[in-house]
Length: 212
Image (cartoon, rainbow, N blue to C red; front, side, top):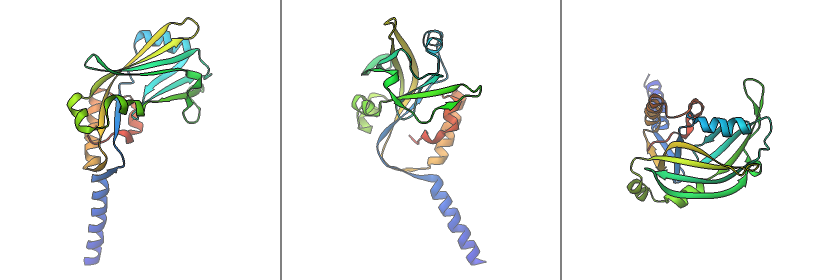
């Protein structure tokens, strides 16, 4: 009986430690974007014109372009601007055609059978350059963590500049051990769902939600 009790206690302890302690291997930012809201202008001039399924900002500071049927579009990714409290804190000049961006995983079919191609632009290093690599400085400069990111695209046929905006929250996660990780993550997910801040796609893969 004592052996059984000891085994159960060990199993419980392992389970408890697994739920409450997570090792974060490196300092990094976590970006949580409001990908669900799309302006009328964005729908008409970007989505319909260039056959986009969606443009996402991801938690690892990348821009993902989901394109129906054909990955070749007459668009150039010009630059990205980061705003905090309506003031621009940094800019990333890209000037690269969407066609020339990296492929992001395997192409897939949507629920109607249409093929979707994915392109991606990585910005993690640019975020560190703009916002810094120090946790204390980040907290001092950006206490509420609420940002807006503007993505500028150029129509290569008309030379018109198109703007795609996303509200987001950006958090700095320090390297080291995080305690009560799973508990805080569940609370955080419930809060974000209540605020309708993130798309359902994000909740299908909530591994990006960190303790902050």
